[in-house]
Length: 251
Image 1 (tube, rainbow, N blue to C red):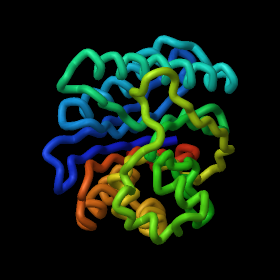
Image 2 (tube, rainbow, N blue to C red):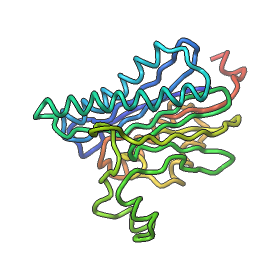
Image 3 (cartoon, rainbow, N blue to C red):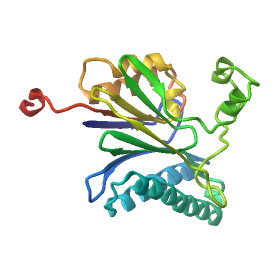
Image 4 (cartoon, helix red, strand yellow):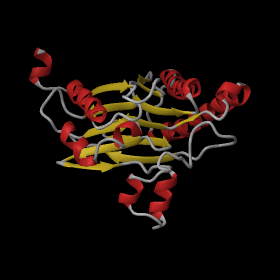
């Protein structure tokens, strides 16, 4: 298994409100996290930073490896971060109303446990096909699901960036959990909407399938999103599931 990630401010924004991180607990279980903050320069930066570093630091102190235990931890710790971010925003006028998306992948043997809130996404590329594993918690996605608009209309909808769920709200936030099996040669991508809004699924798949080092493919995802407009911050975390080869040891 190999992991690479990168975040970029994009071409239109003055600051980067995305945060990304990879953390390992005492049992050797790895989680990857991508968050996309909202609420203005300082507020968005703070919200995404708090959720990623808060979750990461707490995860490193655990020894969890059982799927059900990890699932419970993910939900409870996202709720803890939700309260922290809401309190920070409520007590600081310049950060009022701040919030963030979050998508987390826990790598458990041959399975991925996903937790997410908002419209940052997880994709799997397998056997020449790409599939979105998460469901966007956005207004336009709700309209698509009720049949009020089509997928094509959603891509250009003026309210595309309005979320119906985010971390940093009063009370509790609903967290989506899902489990997926992993095969050799699979690729898992976590990304902010600065990537998924700029590149089509087929473009993302094509870059991920290139016979290049993983780091170069992540850099290409970022550069192609910028070439397509770079209207938002861009973050990509890419995981390649494969057994080490002879070349890995010789490198």
